Length: 169
Ligand code: PNS
Image (cartoon, rainbow, N blue to C red; front, side, top):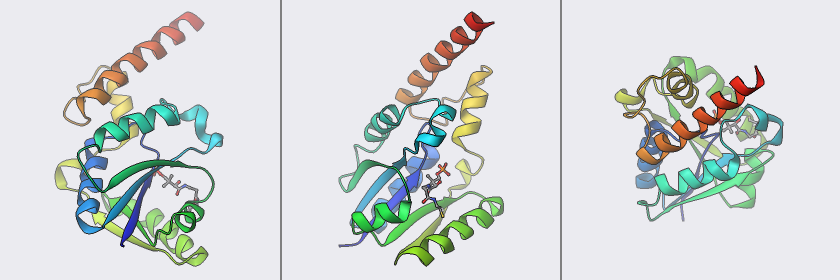
Protein backbone atom coordinates (compact mmCIF):
# COMPACT_ATOMS: atom_id res chain seq x y z
CA UNK A 1 0.00 0.00 0.00
CA UNK A 2 1.60 3.28 -1.11
CA UNK A 3 0.50 5.99 1.28
CA UNK A 4 1.39 9.69 1.06
CA UNK A 5 0.75 12.83 3.06
CA UNK A 6 -0.01 16.28 1.62
CA UNK A 7 0.80 18.59 4.54
CA UNK A 8 0.05 22.28 4.85
CA UNK A 9 -1.69 25.06 6.72
CA UNK A 10 -4.60 25.31 4.25
CA UNK A 11 -5.79 28.66 5.62
CA UNK A 12 -7.88 28.32 3.48
CA UNK A 13 -7.65 25.53 0.90
CA UNK A 14 -7.25 26.91 -2.65
CA UNK A 15 -7.76 25.46 -6.12
CA UNK A 16 -3.96 25.10 -6.27
CA UNK A 17 -3.99 22.78 -3.23
CA UNK A 18 -6.84 20.74 -4.72
CA UNK A 19 -4.87 20.36 -7.97
CA UNK A 20 -1.89 18.91 -6.06
CA UNK A 21 -4.09 16.60 -3.93
CA UNK A 22 -5.86 15.38 -7.04
CA UNK A 23 -2.59 14.55 -8.78
CA UNK A 24 -1.20 12.89 -5.63
CA UNK A 25 -4.37 10.76 -5.39
CA UNK A 26 -3.64 9.43 -8.88
CA UNK A 27 -0.08 8.47 -7.89
CA UNK A 28 -0.66 6.86 -4.49
CA UNK A 29 -3.09 4.26 -3.09
CA UNK A 30 -3.97 6.51 -0.15
CA UNK A 31 -3.40 10.22 0.45
CA UNK A 32 -3.81 11.91 3.81
CA UNK A 33 -4.19 15.68 3.65
CA UNK A 34 -2.71 16.77 6.97
CA UNK A 35 -3.34 20.18 8.48
CA UNK A 36 -0.69 21.58 10.79
CA UNK A 37 -2.54 22.64 13.93
CA UNK A 38 0.41 24.01 15.90
CA UNK A 39 -0.93 26.24 18.64
CA UNK A 40 2.01 28.64 18.34
CA UNK A 41 0.74 29.92 14.99
CA UNK A 42 -2.97 29.72 15.85
CA UNK A 43 -3.42 33.46 16.34
CA UNK A 44 -2.08 34.16 12.85
CA UNK A 45 -4.74 32.01 11.20
CA UNK A 46 -7.97 33.33 9.68
CA UNK A 47 -9.71 29.97 10.16
CA UNK A 48 -9.54 27.53 13.09
CA UNK A 49 -8.08 24.07 12.55
CA UNK A 50 -11.59 22.59 12.65
CA UNK A 51 -12.86 25.07 10.03
CA UNK A 52 -9.88 24.35 7.79
CA UNK A 53 -10.52 20.62 8.13
CA UNK A 54 -14.22 21.03 7.27
CA UNK A 55 -13.35 22.97 4.12
CA UNK A 56 -10.73 20.38 3.12
CA UNK A 57 -13.16 17.50 3.67
CA UNK A 58 -15.66 19.23 1.39
CA UNK A 59 -12.96 20.02 -1.20
CA UNK A 60 -11.69 16.42 -1.31
CA UNK A 61 -14.95 14.49 -0.97
CA UNK A 62 -14.79 13.48 -4.65
CA UNK A 63 -11.56 11.51 -4.13
CA UNK A 64 -12.16 7.99 -2.77
CA UNK A 65 -8.58 7.51 -1.56
CA UNK A 66 -8.13 10.91 0.18
CA UNK A 67 -8.72 11.54 3.89
CA UNK A 68 -8.18 14.65 6.01
CA UNK A 69 -6.40 14.76 9.37
CA UNK A 70 -4.88 17.28 11.73
CA UNK A 71 -1.42 17.02 13.24
CA UNK A 72 0.57 18.91 15.82
CA UNK A 73 4.29 18.59 16.38
CA UNK A 74 6.60 17.22 13.75
CA UNK A 75 5.36 16.08 10.36
CA UNK A 76 7.82 13.19 10.54
CA UNK A 77 6.15 11.95 13.75
CA UNK A 78 2.80 12.02 11.96
CA UNK A 79 4.36 10.02 9.11
CA UNK A 80 5.75 7.40 11.51
CA UNK A 81 2.48 7.10 13.41
CA UNK A 82 0.53 6.62 10.17
CA UNK A 83 2.97 4.39 8.31
CA UNK A 84 3.56 7.05 5.63
CA UNK A 85 6.79 7.06 3.62
CA UNK A 86 6.07 9.87 1.13
CA UNK A 87 5.46 13.58 1.65
CA UNK A 88 3.93 15.34 -1.37
CA UNK A 89 4.61 19.04 -1.86
CA UNK A 90 3.59 21.35 -4.71
CA UNK A 91 6.35 23.53 -6.15
CA UNK A 92 5.17 26.81 -7.64
CA UNK A 93 8.44 28.44 -8.59
CA UNK A 94 12.18 28.39 -7.96
CA UNK A 95 11.52 30.63 -4.96
CA UNK A 96 9.72 27.72 -3.24
CA UNK A 97 12.58 25.36 -3.87
CA UNK A 98 15.23 26.47 -1.34
CA UNK A 99 12.99 26.14 1.69
CA UNK A 100 11.23 23.02 0.45
CA UNK A 101 14.56 21.32 -0.25
CA UNK A 102 15.77 22.22 3.24
CA UNK A 103 12.61 20.77 4.81
CA UNK A 104 12.76 17.65 2.63
CA UNK A 105 16.37 16.99 3.65
CA UNK A 106 15.65 17.67 7.32
CA UNK A 107 12.62 15.37 7.27
CA UNK A 108 14.51 12.53 5.57
CA UNK A 109 17.34 12.92 8.09
CA UNK A 110 14.82 12.38 10.91
CA UNK A 111 12.91 9.35 9.62
CA UNK A 112 12.69 7.10 6.60
CA UNK A 113 10.58 9.37 4.40
CA UNK A 114 10.90 10.75 0.86
CA UNK A 115 9.54 14.08 -0.34
CA UNK A 116 7.93 14.04 -3.78
CA UNK A 117 7.66 17.43 -5.49
CA UNK A 118 4.81 17.99 -7.94
CA UNK A 119 5.11 21.07 -10.14
CA UNK A 120 2.08 23.30 -9.72
CA UNK A 121 -0.10 23.62 -12.80
CA UNK A 122 0.80 26.88 -14.59
CA UNK A 123 -2.64 28.42 -13.97
CA UNK A 124 -2.01 28.19 -10.21
CA UNK A 125 1.68 29.14 -10.11
CA UNK A 126 0.97 32.49 -8.41
CA UNK A 127 -1.59 31.13 -6.00
CA UNK A 128 -1.07 31.22 -2.23
CA UNK A 129 -3.60 31.23 0.63
CA UNK A 130 -1.97 34.37 2.04
CA UNK A 131 -2.46 36.26 -1.24
CA UNK A 132 -6.04 35.03 -1.58
CA UNK A 133 -6.79 36.44 1.90
CA UNK A 134 -5.10 39.75 1.14
CA UNK A 135 -6.82 40.23 -2.22
CA UNK A 136 -10.21 39.26 -0.76
CA UNK A 137 -9.65 41.55 2.23
CA UNK A 138 -9.31 44.53 -0.11
CA UNK A 139 -12.36 43.57 -2.18
CA UNK A 140 -10.63 41.76 -5.05
CA UNK A 141 -12.35 38.91 -6.87
CA UNK A 142 -10.90 35.54 -5.82
CA UNK A 143 -13.80 33.44 -7.08
CA UNK A 144 -11.60 31.68 -9.67
CA UNK A 145 -9.01 30.77 -7.06
CA UNK A 146 -10.97 28.94 -4.35
CA UNK A 147 -14.03 26.63 -4.33
CA UNK A 148 -17.39 28.41 -3.93
CA UNK A 149 -17.94 27.18 -0.34
CA UNK A 150 -14.51 28.56 0.63
CA UNK A 151 -15.37 31.87 -1.01
CA UNK A 152 -18.57 32.03 1.06
CA UNK A 153 -16.73 31.37 4.32
CA UNK A 154 -13.97 33.80 3.38
CA UNK A 155 -16.49 36.56 2.66
CA UNK A 156 -18.24 36.03 6.01
CA UNK A 157 -15.01 35.76 8.03
CA UNK A 158 -13.47 38.87 6.47
CA UNK A 159 -16.67 40.84 7.12
CA UNK A 160 -16.53 39.68 10.78
CA UNK A 161 -12.88 40.69 10.97
CA UNK A 162 -13.56 44.13 9.50
CA UNK A 163 -16.48 44.65 11.91
CA UNK A 164 -14.33 43.60 14.88
CA UNK A 165 -11.53 45.92 13.77
CA UNK A 166 -13.81 48.93 13.28
CA UNK A 167 -15.48 48.26 16.69
CA UNK A 168 -12.00 48.27 18.25
CA UNK A 169 -11.00 51.59 16.68
O1 PNS B 1 1.14 25.51 4.06
P1 PNS B 1 2.45 25.69 4.76
O2 PNS B 1 2.32 26.77 5.84
O3 PNS B 1 3.59 25.92 3.84
O4 PNS B 1 2.72 24.31 5.54
C1 PNS B 1 3.91 24.14 6.25
C2 PNS B 1 3.93 22.80 6.98
C3 PNS B 1 2.75 22.69 7.95
C4 PNS B 1 3.86 21.66 5.98
C5 PNS B 1 5.29 22.74 7.72
O5 PNS B 1 5.46 23.90 8.47
C6 PNS B 1 5.41 21.55 8.63
O6 PNS B 1 5.70 20.46 8.18
N1 PNS B 1 5.18 21.78 9.94
C7 PNS B 1 5.20 20.76 10.96
C8 PNS B 1 6.36 20.96 11.93
C9 PNS B 1 7.62 20.30 11.39
O7 PNS B 1 7.67 19.12 11.10
N2 PNS B 1 8.68 21.13 11.26
C10 PNS B 1 9.95 20.71 10.72
C11 PNS B 1 9.99 20.88 9.22
S1 PNS B 1 11.53 20.35 8.54
